Amino acid sequence: MSDRLGGHFQERQLGRRLCTTRANTPGRVRVALKFLDSATAYLTALFALSSPTTMVATTSEQLSALSGTTVVVHPLVLLSVTDHHARSVSRSSNKRVIGILLGQDNGKTINVANSFGIPFEEDEKDSKTWFLDHNYIEGMWEMFKKVNARERMIGWYHTGPKLRASDQEINDLLKRYIARPVMVIVDVRPQTVGIPTDAYFAVEEIKDDGTETRKTFLHVPSAIEAEEAEEIGVEHLLRDIKDSTTTTLATRVSEQLASLRGLQSRLTDIQKYLHDVATGKMPLNHQISYHLQDALNLLPNLNDTETTQSFVTSTNDQLLVVYLSSLLRAVIALHALVDNKASIGRAELEETKGEDKKEKKEKGKSEKKDEKGKESSKNGSDEKGL
Image: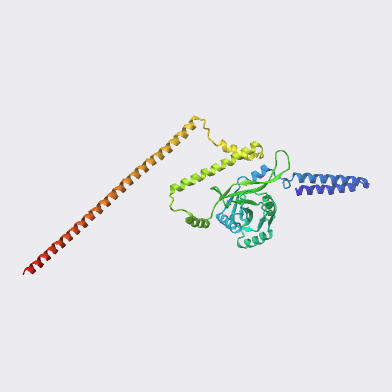
């Protein structure tokens, strides 16, 4: 770009020289210079408009750039955010806390390894009225940089649990320090079982009707991963929380039930969204409709007889295993019951035998005492007769 403009400026200077040498009258020189100035300005504007650095990226280009991006959150960040919320907000309040995320931006993977809270206040009635101490951010960043230079500011978090009206303004403010900030919403009071994090990037949405663009947030997948040292700490925490009385089967069943409840909640959200789009309450988002169509295309065709028969066969095989397991469980329970009654009967029999022996011994002792008493009485009567 700069080379092309430099070449046009050189042509302009050369044109000036030719005009001054060939044209002797000042009128022709002024006309030629004016023409060259207008041509240079036109070319400069043309190349500026065609430059990719000044073009606004469309939504499709931003989606392709962010496709495949995953935000990896470490357990240390979740513990830090939960502690920040517990110390700053009471249980009965709906206020949120905000902080800065530290880590590495590796392009397709955003590694969130650390965080720190920042002073933040907002009006509960008007979410657009808020205060954020950016001087505190600069001071904390200088101290964290001295401790670990590998960790950079990569985004910010808040405890939502949903998007707020002021999130876009806060995100624009943090662009002073972060070129591409990622926003992570951490649900510190989850109502359903699942990952308590949602990651977003700010993009410019271009509407199909040709109206002006508006800024919005694009959701990207997030995951929770831990390093070796963090895994040891999490295992120690779970060891105290885990109930040792529950069996492995009960734990697996409860996990399956929680997964089904999470799937049901997601399907309910999809149904609500489609109903709102059909009634005109929400605008149609083509990307969401494409993803839903891809998900529905993966569903099997239940009208096909072979598919239905294969499902029935698989279900019958699984139910047969369950039926055999129930029979074995019943037989084992009956065997344990019979064994228990037999052991109780043997114990009672041994106790009765022991009591009979004691009674016989006591009778023998009493008989001996009676005999001794009789002998002593006879001896006494004999002595009196003498």
